[in-house]
Length: 152
Image 1 (cartoon, rainbow, N blue to C red):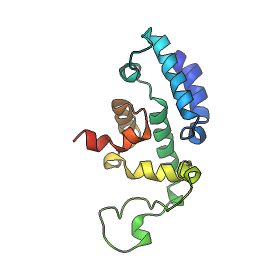
Image 2 (image 1 turned 30 degrees about the vertical axis):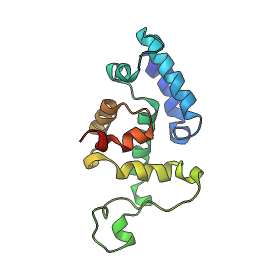
Image 3 (image 1 turned 90 degrees about the horizontal axis):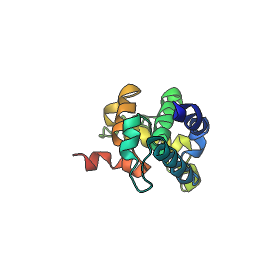
Image 4 (image 1 turned 90 degrees about the vertical axis):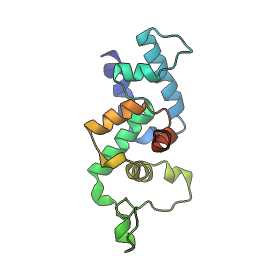
């Protein structure tokens, strides 16, 4: 209850804008510090199991959830690959990821939301998605993208 009333509310307020920024690692370290204090864990103990035990999403998993909520809420802003070209490929039902050359654009919620959405396992959402994110308890975006490779 302490985490959700004080820490979670602050993190979730600006997660859509700051969750993929350079400051996110500092915020994540503070989140882990709070979890360790709550669970009376040692400074070297991994927080991954503590997050699962407390049913709390780590910062990057929380950002993935927020980005996916954004994409689903504004799905009419996005194009499918099948509308861009008529070739039937295995990714024709994915959202079209625009080609950009600036890392600032790649970190914005529009671009990263598409990227995350296209990696969704079997397009499950809300409760299944939160369960998936809790199970993975992802510390980085790359862990999310590598999930299928690791768990085959």
